[in-house]
Length: 615
Image (cartoon, rainbow, N blue to C red; front, side, top):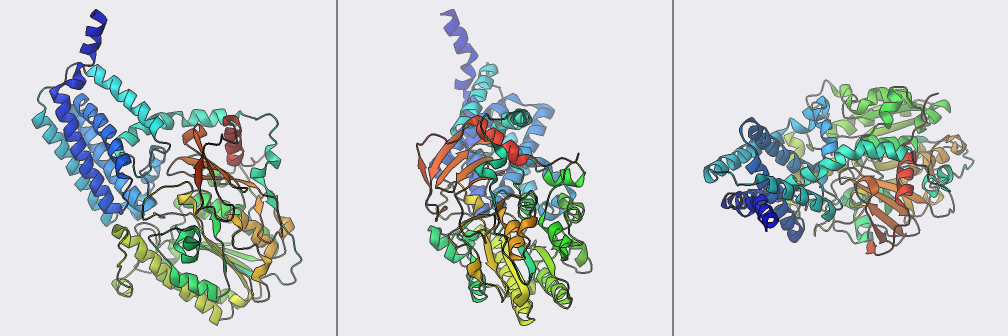
């Protein structure tokens, strides 16, 4: 009886009036925050999941309110307001809550000016004030703290552990900002340990070099005339935005690029229906596209930094083209300093590298850089100048207008847009308008190059650095939603689109470099690149690794129609099946056992993250 009485006393705080008031107040406060998230982002998660998540979050918030006071209380309230602000912005832009492990990016000056120092920053004082209101109301209602607060702390730890097990991803829209943040702490702390463990694993009998996950095939055709190459990367473009792609998979995206799709078809592009974007964030996608290698699958993206700082080397597309006599140029709209591109791009073979500084005389060249109308008009002028030269060229483009905060330029440009009458996700108007301006500007560039005869001698590839912003109207979340990539190819006039794989072919970002090398007659010059050229006639099914750093998910895909979706650290996985010719529209969860062991998964991730060191 003494033990039972002691146990009751230890946990008595959970049944106290003070804690009950704290819990009710926390739940009401979080429900209001949830409503503001929904209205701001246009994303409405499953209400049952969201409510259960908010109940756990309210319990944890109530415990924290009962444990903090003085300076600690002030810091906690400040962090709570900031967390809600960051979560609301991240949910609007990326469709997920923030990840603690990536919070350091917010301190980059370019990122802070481009994405945080905007009109959206006005929400920060609003959330801080709302968090302070919670503090004031709690202090007025709860004058005496609950007894036996140690029991509350134990219950809070148990709740966090249970929450971690209940959600495979801790940042999907149904998560609660308080519960999600606390539940991410253990994995954030343990991540370096898992990386160290993974680097020591060598799975017996697994030949990593020849694994289907590191598949490589080129056709190496004889090409009589090597065309120019125009590689267009559109920031955050999802293949699901093209009506033919979304209809093929039964999707109903919130953005449609019907006009751009029609123009691509008129110019003879082949748009691929099963294109995979391998990761989120620009540096990862750019690395995969230009260097024919997996991007970092860990949270921190370090491959570009390793090359910049002289710790590693890579075989990349622009260097191979430069050695073959091509003039190589990388022209992006954003500042080059962000992600170190001003140093990385020359190291991998680009001779002419420019960013936002090229637009320094234009009034719009602030923040992330010029709006798309200004950017693509400038690009058209530069390419026309290249067209006057006899030397073949390879130009890579990356716009910034479709990046948050979705700058569409002057009021005149905005007035030219059709009114936004889409009933789905009205708060996503800024993204939708930015995509519309990009659509008009890119069409104008293609028309200009066609009129000048430049397209006749040019292989054009349209893709995206990452797939972002795809939100299903019913807000059902499935694996690979944030990896629906975009890829469209148009050969020069003396080539044929039939030289490339069929539209239903599974393609990935790592295939682009090998495809370009094959198309210009340099298929044998691919060095250490991996992937599969789209000019290969037939091939055996391969395996691919795909990840989404914003949800903390890692996917292992077999082109035969099997998928493993694994949570943080690859410890817990679900299995799925799909039609190999219709990946995104046919995913169905199964009870099949994982086709890779934990040791195999960790070894594969480590191999993908590996980069050849400089001896």
